[in-house]
Amino acid sequence: MTESVESLVCVHEKKLREYVSLLSSYEGKIRLTGPSDPEVLWNEHIVDCLHSVPYLPESGRALDVGSGGGLPGLVWALCRPDLQVTLLDSVRKKCGALGEMAAALRLENVQVVCARCEEYAVKEREVFHCAAARAVASADVLLEYLAPFVTVLGRVIAFKGPLYVEEIKPMEGKWARLGLSAPEVHTYTAGEKERYLLLWTKQTPVPKQFPRKIGMAEKTKWWR
Image (tube, rainbow, N blue to C red; front, side, top):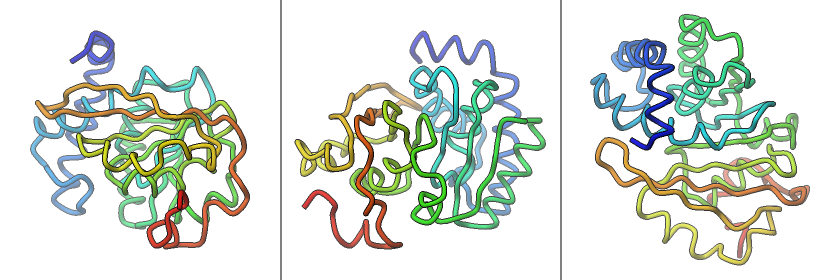
C-alpha cells in the first residue's frame, strides 16, 4: 500500500471493516462483487478503491456508475463524509442491498439511484464533480457513459488491469470528441495484482448526442 492509502486505513479501518463484513454477508444472497471471503474483499477490492480517494474533488458530488456492491462509492462515502456520493445501478436487488448497507453504516451522504446510466444522464447532465466505474465495461464504453455526467474541470475515473493499454490505444488523440483530456495513468498493486487508475479531466461540454440510446455504446464506437 502507498503512504496515502495506509493513512486512510489508519483513520477509517473500523468502518471499512464493518462494510466488508456487510458485503461478505450479502454475497450469499446477491452476487455483488464475486468473492465473499473478507480478506479477499479487503485486499483486492477495498484497497483498490482506496487508491482513488486522493483524486476525489475537494467538495461537491461524486458518482459511482454500475456500483454493484458499492465499490468504489461506499468506500468514498466512508472516507469522505463531506462528499455527496450517488450510487447508480440498473439492478433493483443490488440497489436494495446498497441502500441497506448505507443505512447500516449510518451514511448520510449517500444516494442510491436505480436506473440505466444512458437515461439518468439526461436528467443529471454535467452536475457531478467526478464519476467512476469499476469492472463495468471496456474503456471506450465507460467514457461514453461517464463523460456526460461530469462538470467541466471534473474528473472521469476508471479502474483497470494491465490490458488497459489495448483498450485505450484506438482512442488516442480522439479524447476531445467527448470533451476530455488525455488520461493520467497511476500504477499500484492491490492484493498482489497490478492495477491502473486512469484519470481524465473534462475540458469542454460533451456533444449533445452522448450518451446514445441504450446498447449503442457497445455496438458502435464513438471514436470511429
